[in-house]
Amino acid sequence: MKTISKDGRSIRAQSIYDEAHKRLIDSAIELFNNPNVPNEKINISLIAKNAGTSVATAYNHFPNNLIDVFGSIFNIGFQTIVDSVTEFNKHNPDPYDQLQAFITIQTETAIELGNSVREAFYQFRELLINGKWIQGEPYVFLSNICEQYAKENSDVNVKSLADDIFVLWNGYIYLWMRYNPNFEIWSQFTDEWLLQKMSKIVDKAIILQK
Image 1 (tube, rainbow, N blue to C red):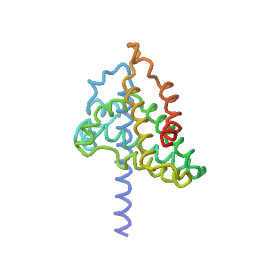
Image 2: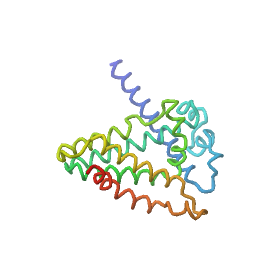
Image 3: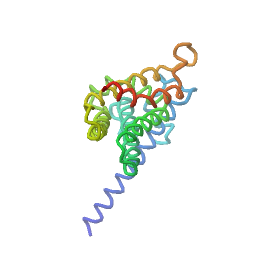
Image 4: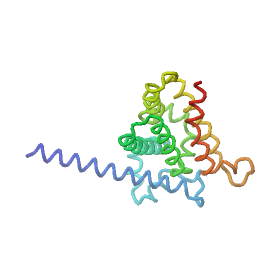
């Protein structure tokens, strides 16, 4: 009986922790996407207040300050992508369609996260240095799909295809990150522009293999 009770308490405690963590991440995403809140004003205290929780609780979840917040935004976003793509793949075994779905879902997730993921990308170097980068690198997930595609297309090199898709995707994301409606050059890199460009990168990468 004691073991069952202890397990029950542990499960409940983990559930409470996970719920609080999601609430805090949702709060951070909301703040970074609020045009009335300057990004430089966002800190752990403000995130906690907006989430309706204590600052102490927030620091328990993010002991390394905002770098933990950005790492969590990436990890939650990537897990959403993995879950969605995995579900898609169950019903569509075609690796070409799976590649297209991976790119589309990843792009749509970035757009949904908006300025919060832009701000997180700016911290990429710090995330790497501090070991906060995505658990389960997106490149590995992409490479696995490319491997399936190569099994049906013997003229394709798995690493080359994965590299080309990865480079193209990051190149367009880099420009989208710098979207600014107040500057002529940067104002063109809208969400619609990103979706349109991303829809073509799988075909571009495949052409590069020939």
